[in-house]
Length: 573
Image (spheres, rainbow, N blue to C red):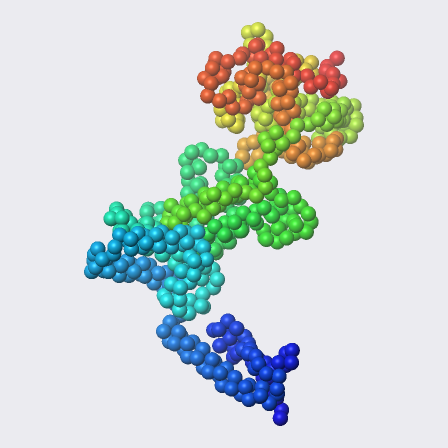
């Protein structure tokens, strides 16, 4: 007797194994029907296999009957119709509960009412935190409300409907709890389920739960730019924000429905940020961000630091907050997220130059003799050309000024007190000059070293020649900053030729070296903050009118000498 076609042996015991037809397999979620025939004897197994074939055929028939029922009952719904059905469901459920409450008032005992309240609150908690019970609750409602009518939707819209159902059940429970507490002050809790007209910002139409993230980001940017222009935010800052929005949109997904964004998606966004290579646009200008992440990992490039991650994360939060205002989200799922990695202590964010590094800078051909101060600044020669490239690093080292504060100086900004003390006057700026903060406005006596190097002679030449600025060879960038080109030259071209570039160091390291030097001379804190143009708190007496004069500050400025650094080779003989 030949064996049955679906019989096979396993461990000596006969088994029945048969593949389901594809339509049934898709419905059941299983491809193969398997059953042990529970016998070692072939003849007995053949008999049982024939019986099992009848059982298999019955299962297939039952499955196909269920498929037919579902297909006849549930025609395919477009996404928009599914949204309408969910909104209608909320209203219908509330009406049913109201009828029950009206038809049998006071039928529950106090203990039963207390239990119902606890059940509702627990259910609400499970839905908000999306626990396993909450997921099961939503899935059950999905089945009774839609059956298989949404199986044709793509994953993004399926997620959107799932999130819509979660919001719908939360809305319904909040309404129930409010009425049980005799609170009728609100007709709705989630704007999505309101019948009221939308706020003006939404163009008079309620925001659809399927609005894509890219569209929300564009709306946020339009609103931000409008407010930024109204408040005088600089073009550079506006462009920075626009770049942040572009990256955030790509990482989150332009077509991602806003209603689907939950805490887990926000976590995934945060994790992607933690893997994004620093300066990815510089190294991978033509790659999509996901490809840049893969390439950066392969090439071992450092990832975004904590501070930069925070900028992107804050941008995502701002966009989602805007979505909450428009009614696209009930709450911001990223509100409490923090970036990966530890924030560097302030003292480690930018590192000062060591004395050895400062010696290398001011012993370069630019300061000891070069061919010219342009293309041949690094080639030894017999010229010491005292222009911007010579003076700017020295002024920043000895006065701690910010690069643009120096690069935008005009001859009129150099003044002299009645006692004869020359000083930089940063208290009055023209339309083409900017200062970072209010505390940046200050008067700083010229360091004696600069006087010995001939800086005042240089100033006199510019005043006599009616030069528009002290360093006319420096050009403004498109944002009006005179320091951009100079900083690019110093950081990328000059310094790499004279010293080892270390992490956390750049031209701004001169300002940090200056800060350390101020600590060394142990002057009054109020004075030290004034010299560096740092915030001076809320002490009214710290303002310039009631504070130190350049004559009083000079005795402290004279102490700024950088022990171990000899600059005497730059003094005029």
